[in-house]
Structures are given as structure tokens and as C-alpha cells.
Length: 334
Image (cartoon, rainbow, N blue to C red; front, top):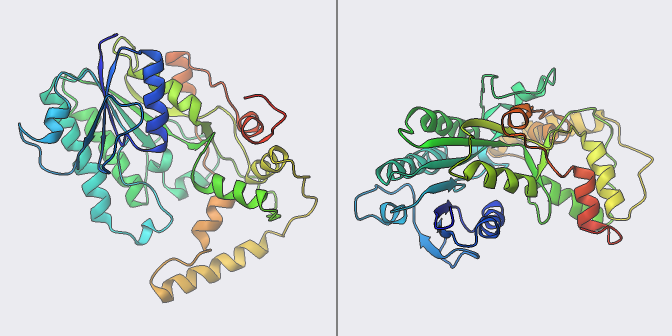
């Protein structure tokens, strides 16, 4: 284990950077090769390699050489989900998330990689499927993606399981990730609260699963060890369910703001969302607030992570309330 060579794609990214440092802490003697399409020296990597995974692989290609003598691959590189993707370029998602990933898998097979850990997303379940909210979606539920991002993530999940050869495949389907320096909608909500913007959301009684980035890293280190029994698909959450209003209340508490005792009635969100849909159709691009935006506030995204708990005895250390207090409340120790 001490002389392992570990390859991490998307090495300059938010989760990858935290993973790289955790891998070094877990095994100081390991060699980490970081791959990214953006030039730079990736923090914590012993070797930083600039490579476009979607380019054709040959024996003397950068990608092939990057995997020589490597033991484990962590695949985090990809075109990420964005608000505008429904109007985006489907071909770009397929080129990066499917063709690029297939090239990486082929180069891994050629170099006899032992273990391949792929970071996927619960976005493989489409919004309509998630919004049923009748039960948490598990690894055994059929995924019906409705965005290019979700479709391409699911396609490579399938390819990895069917074409892995002698490689042990591990797929981590992540729910929404929070934690120190997190990105996306949660960061925007925190920023608004800090600026004193009230955001008087009603209680939608929706169900949303999330996970702290530190627990994501713990899982990744665990399943990436060559002696690990982990194999196949695992969904990753902190085991709790949150409503959007509850999340907002936690943020206000962590930022030292008093709770809000008023809320805008739900119809005042629904009507503008429908108007936004119509404006989007007229303009040919998404309006800043539409039904998709409303769904991110009021919709469900509820998932089970019982399998990883049962198979690997993994128990998260963090929940959203504890994480926010740790990060933003100066009176709470980290």
C-alpha cells in the first residue's frame, strides 16, 4: 500500500483537492498523479499532468503514460451540471462525460489498474422521478435521467460496470454536497443571508438528501483501498432529510441571524415561475427564475444510503446543522 500510485482526474476541482490531501494523509508514501485539462501544478500532487481525456488514446499518448504502473484511479473530471444545461450542447456533455470517461477506462484496462472509483451523481434520477417523494430512491431503483448531465453520468455508470474487465469498479452517487467552501445553490443562499437578504421562504415540506464533503472524502478513501471489499454502486448521503426552509433556518442560526417569523405564500413563487417559463420560450433561453428554479427550492431529492452503511459499515460524522455551525459560528470549534 505504501508505494501505491494513485491517479486523480479533475485534480484541480473542489472535491478532488480535498481527496488528494486526504489520500496523502492516509498514505504519505503514495504517489499521486493529478490529471486536469486546465494547466497548473495541482496542490498535493507529486505529478501534475495536463490532458484532455476525450482525445484519442494511443500507446504514446499523455493519458496512456499517466496510468503506467498506477494502482487506483479516482475519476472526478467531467462537464458539470449547470442551470442552463437544458439548453446546452448535448454533444459537449457526451464528448466529455462519456467519450472522455471511456478513454480513461480503456487506458486503465491497458495498464492493469486494480480499482476504478467513479464519482457520479443522484442527477441520474430525473427531476420528475425525484419529485414523487413517496420513498427515498435507492441503488435498486431504475434511473430515468432528464438532463444531459444525468444521462451522461448514468451512461458511464453502465459502461464501467459492463466493460471494466479485471478492474474492480466502484461508483459513488453523491447527493448535494455541503461543507467548508462548498459551491452551488447552498453557497448562494449562505451569501444572501450574510448580506442581510431575508429570503422569506415558506415551508414547502420537501425532502432533500445531502452530504458533507468531509464524509464524501472518507468514503472515497475507504473504497479506493486495493484491499477494500467495496464493489459496484453506492449512494452517499448523511442519512438525514432536510426541507429547504429548515436549511435556511440552519444557515441563519449559523450566521448569527435571528429566525424569520414570516414567509411569502407559495403562490407568489408558483406564478412567477410559470411566467419565467413563458419568457424563456420567447427568448429561447432560460429566464433567471422559472419552474426549474422553483423545483430546486421546493422539490424533493430524497435518497437512501443504507447500502453503503450495511456493506461497508460506513457512518457519516457530519450533518448539515453541525457542519454549518462549525463553519460559520465563531463560538463553535471545528
